[in-house]
Length: 371
Image 1 (cartoon, one colour):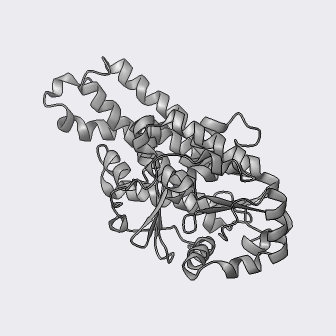
Image 2: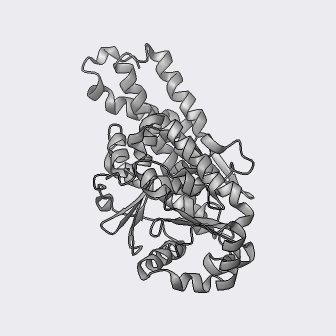
């Protein structure tokens, strides 16, 4: 932000307390503040309506240009947060091929992190919000509650590693958002998959696990369909259109859009306190949309595998589908409320419907499919 890269943690904390965050926000350039406001104001959008965006607004990211090709470990080691960022960087270079790390390399060396005392939260983040850390693509910095630093930092670093800006659009993993906040899509899936990766690689650290539990489950089930390597590569390259194209192998584009919009709605409202009955109905509707979408993906994938000989008989086909249905489950409890979103009866109905509809498409010789 101000170029003082060599300040240690106590000095940074002193400086932040000195300017008391209201001055910090005044120091940010107007574009950064516009982005900041769009992020925070998004919390008040769609209060009693399902979030809906048009998939035509999803933008194909421009070609990635690698501006940096290595991590400046010496520079990072001078920062108060260097230990955690270096640990993250080493895992990234060990676990992922270079072609997945263009955004990571372009961002890592210039990243800056501000920690704040919990009592100052209301000055930068609504004190009623559950959010205690935010990565800002514009400015390439993280603001994080110092009380939860070790728990949250790796989630935010995955946001950093998958982020870029082009043509007025923020691309971050599977999320896209206009800088002015007029459009966003994919936040629910993106938060779930970001947390899934944080837990996969840093879950041994106390406190890392536990954020976005339902969305982590959704992201993990989707990853089973797409494949872990492919999905991680798309995420780190911020290629939402690439993910959409993968899913179009199984379902129509409009159903993918419904899934993304429903996931966005769930991210915002599932754990909201004091929800009116009308909100609960919309949450249930969104959960049904998400889980029926995942089940349909799995059935269509299973049928393709059966036709191509990857599942050798009807027993394997049925087992493949039923195991996935069991992972989906039937309901989720939030506080004293239970949301029911799937059932064995509905799974059987969908299974028969999809097999009947897709039989001719995937099997020229209908006799090869045993009903």
